[in-house]
Amino acid sequence: MRYIARVSSHDADGDWSTRHSVLTMARRTAALVNALAEDRPGSDRLAEVLRAYGEKGPVDLTARDVARMREVADRLREVFAAEHADEAAVTLNRLLGGHTGPLRLTSHGGGTPWHPHLDRDDDAPWDEWFLASSCLALTVLLWDRQLPPGRLCASAACRNVFITQGPGPERRYCSRRCATRERVAAHRRARSAPPRG
Ligand SMILES: [Zn+2]
Image (cartoon, rainbow, N blue to C red; front, side):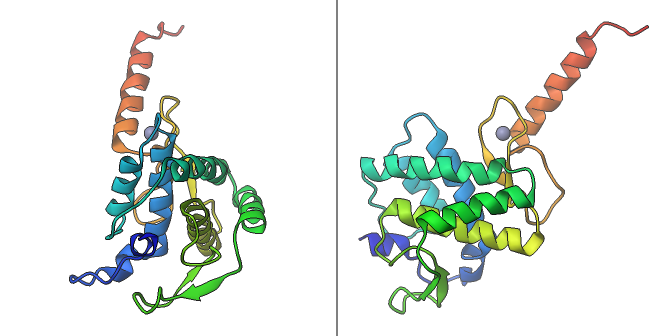
């Protein structure tokens, strides 16, 4: 069943290239890192995130899978914490060297177009898949733009990571919610500050 869960077949509406783009893979990484940072995320919560990023089949995640994916999320968080491309590249190289297999192509038995994977085989455990697919997407984004692929939310009240690359203006916060909360807080601080001079 893991095979089905890991493979998304073509959609009738033909959005395959969108769902499987590097940017979508990287955004899925950020969403999983954030979900895994929540207090005791269950397998249901992770399955919800995976489905939001195109998984079609049943998602069978055991408590052990979730625990191991949390460890992977902590490792990946370091890539998002890097402030410069050099730092992000060193962190990615460490992960690639120690935790992923060689680059290979798979079509999941003909169910998808050929695409690259870094996990050892199509039935690799979830944590191995999570780390390998994340490293692949983040590496390609760094290569493409020569910038860190993502960052930590600038709000001290938020632990989320997010992908900085893609269309739209550069942002400091993971979400509109965080940006609004910080803007309101800054406004309050400015109003309550004693007048100068
Ligand atoms: Zn945030």
